[in-house]
Picture (cartoon, rainbow, N blue to C red):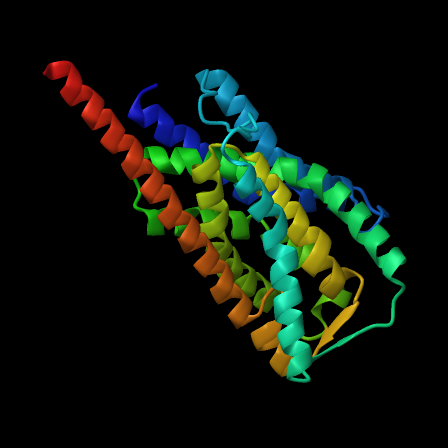
Length: 288
């Protein structure tokens, strides 16, 4: 496939991604009285990026970097890290918030809470197959083909991922989510967060050469901190706590996630240097 065709395919993917939510909004406007948060338009918004990815790969006969194989050999520690990072970070950050009287936890039965978390994670595993095979299974490797430096890779992939949510934040979500911030404020915060989070998602994909650790990591994010804070309301934060110590949007939390992503980057770069050194030694041995 020529370089021009690769660029056109990537541009087409990004255009469809950014339009998909608004296509869903248009569909919903023609079909009134649909259930809140599970409308046909929302379904289209969720699946159109993956459908576009599959069509482009089929037309271009380009399946080499889709990351569908689990690649478990040598990567189990990264699967463990993907599963653990959000729950561990939630415990640490909420613990700090409680220590500084910036959070409170509702009285809830532990067994019921664990059951709720389990159901949420299971459902989000399915949902995040559609997301992660779009962002890490197509967008990331195709941006890598353009030879972007790492920082541009994080920025562009994070912004596309975030702006895909625009219709979700601006239209699909009910007003109850926006009691303390505006819809536009929510979108701008989402852009900052997803650019920051893209460091660890992109590096997890590059390190393992598989999308599945990213699927698991994303499901744990939706199923643990987002559930406890935004969906079930188990954790309540003060304004100061929300700014600094929210397990999803807090400044300290975000800095720690970026740090985790940069650590993954350093591990990946060392791994690549060893591979390149081994190839160079093999080539030298052949020539001599």
